[in-house]
Length: 322
Ligand SMILES: Cc1cc2nc3c(=O)[nH]c(=O)nc-3n(C[C@H](O)[C@H](O)[C@H](O)COP(=O)(O)OP(=O)(O)OC[C@H]3O[C@@H](n4cnc5c(N)ncnc54)[C@H](O)[C@@H]3O)c2cc1C
Image (cartoon, rainbow, N blue to C red; front, side):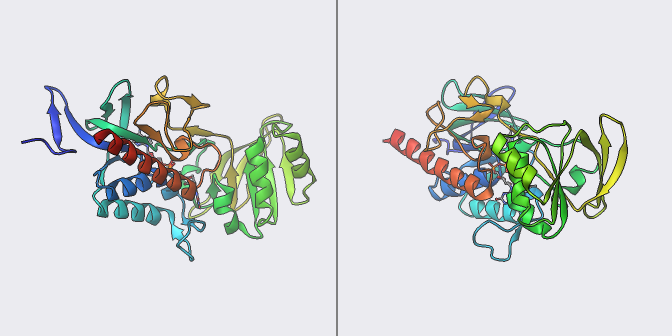
């Protein structure tokens, strides 16, 4: 009997290799949207979740800018709904984390913590992670005053004082965006001058709602259920203080989760390069969401890229089958 796709189809002495038509790496909005489309195309895709089931969005308390939820939706709940919808059509969501890939020949080989996979086509949706300050309290209060996305969370801080950390373009752009809601926005920057472009600097420095704290770093985020204050330190004078605030927006860069593709997929600054059909430089390998997008970084744009990658992967496999 011919083994069915996705069945264990190859065994070696040490590892079992599971064969699948389509393997999707990542269970964020891009990966699960790709899974939904592929499942509806009857490809029975396997999704490896990685260590963050639901992706970055599952970290946030409330999402108010994803269409279809006029009252907003919890980030974790949205991730669960994405998963449920993909599974309803036959996607297999597996709690496993890819460690290495071999894209030199097909089927592509992916070695994960709990198994090895051979895939006729691959969608990389491993996302990115905002760089953290790595200070006590930060991780515990993500989505409760600590944010890495002003577009996502700015509206929760109407008429409140908030802090922005960073001195580059993102920090100032997002800081200026926050002035729509916040009563005042304090930029906390470890240097005594900004790295952002001249026009942005001028706009920020001239905005009456924007204030600047130079040569300063946050050393602690304080709060139980939500952020209440930050401990700050002037790195020139060593002076320390506690500054009350309900919101801290951190923009000190993003790191795409793409290290394992280095030397195999074409990348720019760590982001996988795709064409407008989500194709990478290797036929049969597609990429979607923040792993391939340093610019938009939203649930809806990542989900859209996932859907597009999946449609394209389906065509790729169909064309091959003739
Ligand atoms: C705190 C916060 C709040 C946000 N709020 C909003 C909001 O309100 N609205 C909005 O539109 N956007 C919001 N965003 C942005 C949004 O979450 C992201 O744009 C979106 O999640 C990106 O989706 P993605 O699928 O590309 O990647 P991610 O969400 O980053 O998911 C990546 C997935 O890949 C998996 N993975 C990583 N490495 C591996 C591996 N080696 N093997 C297998 N899997 C792997 C991870 O476990 C994860 O499941 C927010 C982001 C943050 C951090």
